[in-house]
Image 1 (cartoon, rainbow, N blue to C red):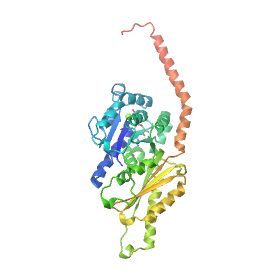
Image 2: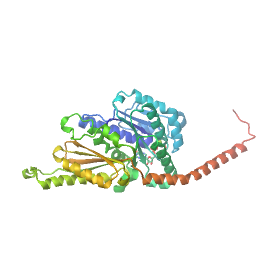
Image 3: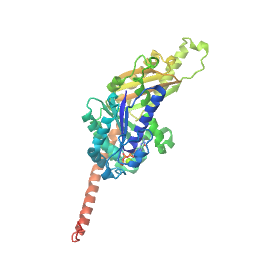
Image 4: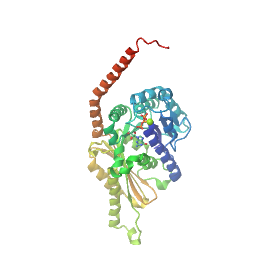
Length: 391
Ligand SMILES: Nc1nc2c(ncn2[C@@H]2O[C@H](COP(=O)(O)OP(=O)(O)OP(=O)(O)O)[C@@H](O)[C@H]2O)c(=O)[nH]1
Ligand SMILES: [Mg+2]
């Protein structure tokens, strides 16, 4: 599958930059292309300059809100991010249109963090514009949810997240949820290592995007996962995970026979990779609530067999009994067995529900503060009443 990727705001642009990196990898390691266009959009000029892989021209790194934001962001006010996107969104649409290879793409992927101002506000607005303009291609969103410490110290983060999620879920064909906090769970040092987290966010998409683009017969699986399968799977709230198991073994001659123990070891490795994919899902969720699922097994040819694919299917069926399950295999060289797992069409996501509850409680407080600011401003205006104006 080929994606046009658009990163919005700081977090969104940096993760989009990782997709541009994945594309470079796909080109050099596999001679295929997975992202014919990658763009970064921000109100902050310095953030745009610090990207590494996205083209450096003004059509690839797009500065919006020039006058309003002065090139310095919108300071977490996502209403302002949305307003600027409405005014300057044409710049993004123009850039997409002029991208040389845009017509080869199968879908759009728009990426933003929900807790800030620019990305959170611009995501639903630009998604809407892209959908209006290119209605025939699916438009997916990837939303990066804030760390726990941000939620507890700054309630605006929760409010931004709730408004962003509500707005994007009504427009995008599917919304990938990625929880920053998930990456800190195992490795606490990651809290201060956003670059590493960004790599981990993009990584699970690598095999998934490459599988259907392969041209060399020896890398084409018995059941290829192509853009059509992915499109059929992705709808509504969605999570993704990736896991791998090492299959490098010393190959003694008697091991190459049809030894049943060897076969069960392979199946075991497949389950091990699937377990890791499940525990590494981009957001903690209950698979019972998923309406669709897809898994892709990527492994050396000789390590793959129908039995593993079937075992993995049975495993997922037990965990997600309400889901329509799709699968595929992708033979590659190397010594690892990889599982990419997508769960989609969630009927319930506890974390999203909690954002909505918490920010509903915040609305009266925000309205009170807004009124207070207005009254104070009025007071100062009144005090200036008799002073002559220079205008
Ligand atoms: N994973 C990840 N999260 C990030 C990154 N940068 C910021 N965030 C998260 O994104 C949220 C803040 O949003 P930003 O993306 O910085 O904000 P913005 O869209 O640039 O908007 P403003 O700066 O307010 O104009 C917080 O929850 C951060 O933890 C990043 O590079 N990677
Ligand atoms: Mg910013």
